[in-house]
Image (tube, rainbow over all chains, first blue to last red; front, side, top):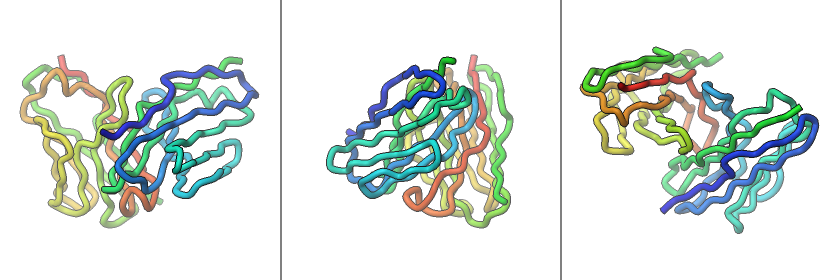
Length: 109
Length: 114
């Protein structure tokens, strides 16, 4: 079967750095997405990785290792507004999006 | 600019009642359209997707159905709701296949079946 694993919940301090991991086992790979979802709202796009390496976009960076079936989302200089769920999603060989259950990130002052 | 809107935002329905959720997209032509359901503690589940008017693909067997009567309109329906239909429903669109770009989501519709 296809599987996306992410920690259920993480806690971090305002101003700090946090890394949210995602491991996947899918039938093929055609890219990996990270989305942010605030409580009760729709997900919004953060990043897309299809090649190995690090993609940096402001305070957020996303890393991919296809050989390890692994990605992480790195959030720097955390702000209270970063409190949200972070969803990892993989495009499989049939070009279907397989979604993880999401990681709820709690930021404390 | 492109926008997506879905409604109603929340609804409480008795078991056995019908359902209609509507979604419209503005500012683009021939989008790919999707209906997802999000249950607590689980990943987004794709229910239906459409690549054009009248073209609907169903991903899971269920008592829900979808229709695309116009290019930028996507409707999710049920004739008789079940308790298990409760959840957060999200409409989304994309310009191409999912690996070529991001999904843009509507605001979501929270359905509670009692």
